[in-house]
Amino acid sequence: MPDLTLRPFAWPDVPEITAIYRHYVETSVSTFDLVPPGETLMAEKFGHLVELGHPLVVGERGGRVLGYAYASQYRPRPAYRFTCEDSVYCAPEARGQGIGTALLGRVIELSGAFGFKQMLAVITGESEASIRLHETLGFHRVGTYERIGYKFDRWLDIVHMQKAL
Image 1: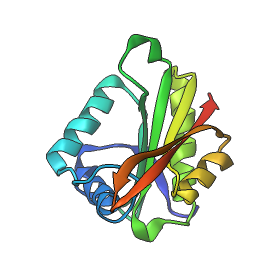
Image 2 (image 1 turned 180 degrees about the vertical axis):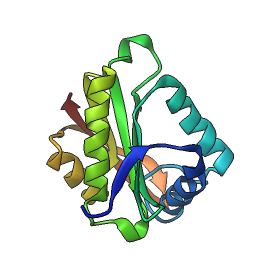
Image 3 (image 1 turned 180 degrees about the horizontal axis):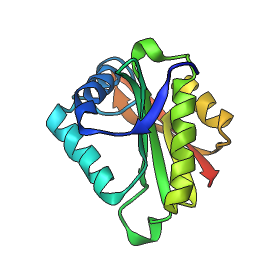
């Protein structure tokens, strides 16, 4: 992918990352957030990931953030310490260019190096592009929770996918 740089998160990325996430909160069912978080909340979230040393990667072209991806511990209980959940978001104009694949591929590599053994993806059933992305990178479906989220006046399923690292 020409000119795409994958690099670690940096604090000046917060405004662009917040704007990317805001788009998905306001226009899609990719996230079950109903109110877009502001920059302060996003900085706190990402600060926590940085503090823990969890993988957090930004995709950039020409000095502009086009997407980001990270892995965080699946649940806070100690028994889950070797299992992570991924998240990947691309700027709307950057979708379909392979940026999400590059970002998630890098997060998978870093997650294994960090010591995670399993990676989970929790994906809205309607997010077919995200399901395909994860399948392309070796995830398999492990189940579906039906009608557990309610957004934009409809009930939504969640697909769980898993990959051994």
